[in-house]
Length: 160
Image (cartoon, rainbow, N blue to C red; front, side, top):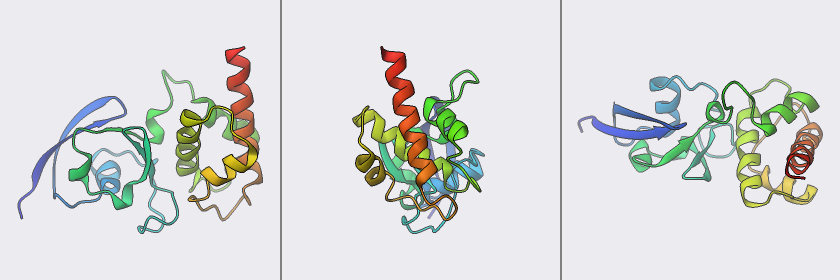
């Protein structure tokens, strides 16, 4: 099967890339576009390290054939910061120590961003449910949840 020219919208920019049709979106993001914030953990959709937003919906990029992403809007962890300013969720993870080794961090942050787009004032239970598909072996989730709570409070202060 020959390679295909696929057009992707990633972090607000357009890219035309020759790829194998069933190549994983994860591999295209990391290898072709050099967006290494997207991590491969399990390669089976179980750990969440490769999470990205595809048309605003959280997906595991290791499970998405790149041909299915053609023309879609894709946001990776690199696309959250604007003009050198970290996204409020990213900043909260830094401030509250929501990272340890950092391997799960981008997927966790993407899951939280997806949650906050749907529910800007989640309960702790809703926060925990939203990150349930993301595995962390370092923090025990306490500082991650604290980071999300700080991000929610920061957003509420900005809106007030």
